[in-house]
Length: 264
Image 1 (cartoon, rainbow, N blue to C red):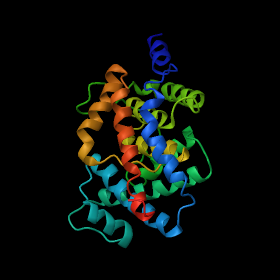
Image 2 (cartoon, rainbow, N blue to C red):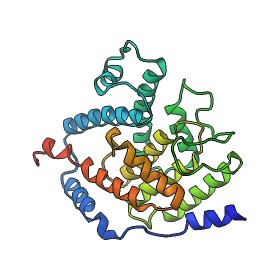
Image 3 (spheres, rainbow, N blue to C red):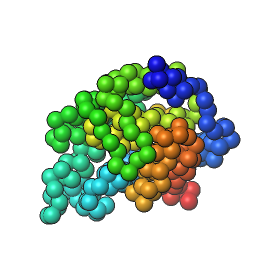
């Protein structure tokens, strides 16, 4: 009974911010759209930079110690870095491949579903964990967080409710708010034993990219605020701080485009 009340509250149709809060990012998107299709060489350079930065920062948030330049060597030269673990190398390679899969979903116009979410997780943790691509079968505690993920027996029910909400809200919320809420809710549910952060960030970017926004990179330097804002969702169902953080990052995500388009 309490679980049903919780889900009804969490997945109520509530817009946490007015459309005015998204005017800047909408204007930036309109500016970028006016220059589409982008030059092929610019697209190539932008993608290479995005894959490198996104892979480095997303893994660094989770404790991977490869530097930005070391990540570049692993991804572009296929070399191993002395003193770094096999897992850290796999995390870099796997994340870059997960981005490629993400792009195929965007190109196909495919929304997130349970199969694609599990496939993203499987790619992120391929060769690292036997549970890659499968929901957790035990309980977990998030170190330092004020909230505790639901019992593993409730994970499937919570994920069903998440996808029901996603199907209903897909065109009703601003895409940036929708993407941020998706990410936050997935982290709170914590459907996988490990890799929930990386998988949730990929899911968020699927939604942003489907709506025509650039890929968002959450910098490791914002890790403390990022965790704090996500915990506000888990403990108080307060989405606004995290949505505002994502809005600011979306605004920043346009910056690499302007020099290559001669608009800096």
